[in-house]
Image 1 (tube, one colour):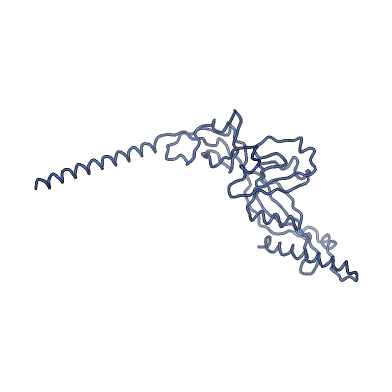
Image 2 (cartoon, rainbow, N blue to C red; image 1 turned 90 degrees about the vertical axis):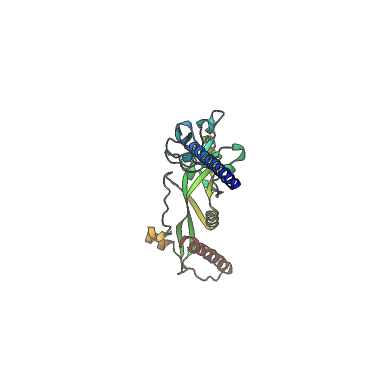
Length: 283
């Protein structure tokens, strides 16, 4: 009987000890999570691809439980050798906490490979300098349009302009990489300028096909504009009916064998273009 009472007393003491330890540990954890920590937040809206400088940052004290994973606690961490060394990988809103997952280091030795957003690819297109110089800059957002010629159901030649891809981030223009210093002297002497864009794999497929079968044009959009427009191809007769009629021609048989062969090749190419339009632009 005495042994049973002793066992109960010991068990009760151990239970009380474990309960005290648990409550103490929980209290310490809660106290730790409620401790204030310093975080760095955006002092203004920071666009995707912008170089982050001190004036864009401010400190904010928050309970540790409200600090986002990988939060940054010192503005000095954005600089190396007194120079800004990071650009925004995504758009950061005013007051939003800046974490290490939202910024990308600038490294000129690695080219643009380290500034391609996660899940994206880089594709380079060549444009006439007059389309780009003084208009498109690294860090801008652009849309791509394709102008293609195809044969309609009446076997008439038609042209159409279609949106190939929207809201693409410009990673570089010429040798000016996003986050680096612009080289205006090089732009002045260039006739054609390469523009590298951040795209998805599907967008890359559309762009390459459109480039192969037609002409691609680049248009600038506002940095704050993330909208998407309904993609309806625009034909020449949507602009001017008379021009459309003058641009049409009936495909006729020719006595000349070479002319006939050339015409068949052209029809085959136009059918390929029409298939592309049906597949990608008229969904």
